[in-house]
Image 1 (tube, rainbow, N blue to C red):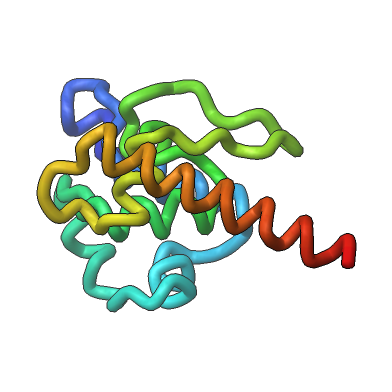
Image 2: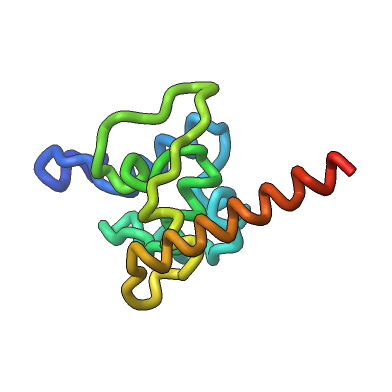
Length: 127
């Protein structure tokens, strides 16, 4: 019996994870080891658990989907061959690891620094 059926028809993380693995032609254990996780994570997820933020981000990147899709918060998968759009919240999490509040001013400063580096490298390539 699928977990979705056991949970009143709601799609749960493990169902989505298992489906993504099947689409890729790999086992759920292989996906875990490919991103550096212990295979024991599968047992936790089978019983209804979800991955933490860092792990969810790694899995989403591995499968080329959004964390919202992976965690069943949306039913809309990313279009095939289309580059995934990363949200500001995902970028903030990647940069700061979810530690504490990230203000808009802090995030704007990071974006200005990134633009500076990009421009510097463009200038160097012209020389």
